[in-house]
Image 1 (cartoon, rainbow, N blue to C red):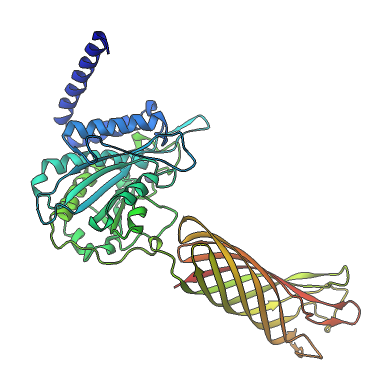
Image 2 (tube, rainbow, N blue to C red):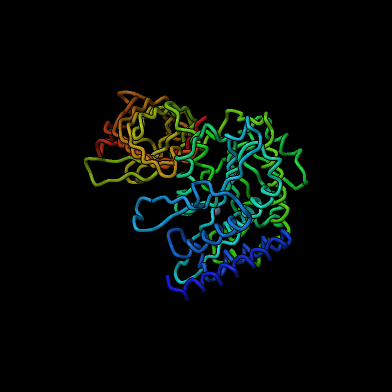
Length: 490
Ligand SMILES: [Zn+2]
């Protein structure tokens, strides 16, 4: 480095530190505003993970941490680098600091507070500024760290402050930290994600209070008063946030948010729409919440986690509703039956075998009404048969996990068996057995579907290979059923 460069660097450092001093005198709301406008500025182009733009954002956060005197979590760097499969040449990094607790009995335990700083970047030439998602959480995180440092005497457990990278790509930053940290030493993990719209949302939502012993009572008693909506557990698999990796490691987690009232994942999620007064209130409230969690020796895990975070059980029982088409086919001729309806209700039993396989069975009570063409009326004048029957499917399938163990696609194939109970044409009973329609039938079944949490949607095809009835003019007929099924697992 030559002398000119050294001089330039010294001047830059002076400029940086003087602007930092100026910052420390500013009021909380102004500082939140400064962070948020900087993070959403055009220069940072939407902070897409793995780009120079995200690197600038993480540099800014690290500078803020350094300026307030936050200790780096790993050695002397705030940056924790990690890789993302499928993006081998890109750099990803969390920004992490730590405030050591004062209570010798608790200081080797942790409260982790995080907010992701990445967003969607530029798409089709448009910048996605991500002001609410999640410059709001990141700005609050920086100021939360400053408040906690100022009150560090009150802390018992150590507090880890982390700005996560690559959340939008699939929670990579938080998953990585959850993997490398000792989960059994974390007493609470908090993710602040989208907290910039308090006025519009009217309440701050905290999901996961059921993961802490008497969590709701504890939080309601905390000052300063703020309108809260407490949920025992996170429910929606569609709005996953950085809590997931920690929850899957067995850690109690809170997801803190004002919800998706902002223009979610749209270019219109801009800084000018942020409720800074609300963001300030949330920052102050989160400060007392973290201080309280850190100091309280009795603070404990309730032992419960949200179902969406827990592993898939080996055996599941659910209720199923089905609706779809039932039709009659004439395999020996060109004649095709018309589509009638099929409705059903029953139970599904699913065995999850290892990581990939699923065995499914159950029983459905069904009302089926296949039709046939007007020019071929095997029974009286009607063109519709009404059948009540019980069907038992048995399939083996493959699961393809998507975002977590309870969100997966599956494809299955097997056999079904139907026992007919009653059949009629209009008001006239049709006999079952030799003189009427066949009492039972079987055939191959193919199904595929999507499981999200406790709910499963499937599309099922059943191909009857035994004859339903024989008409004098057209010969043998078989059934074909195409159904949608919705199952709710208990
Ligand atoms: Zn987000």
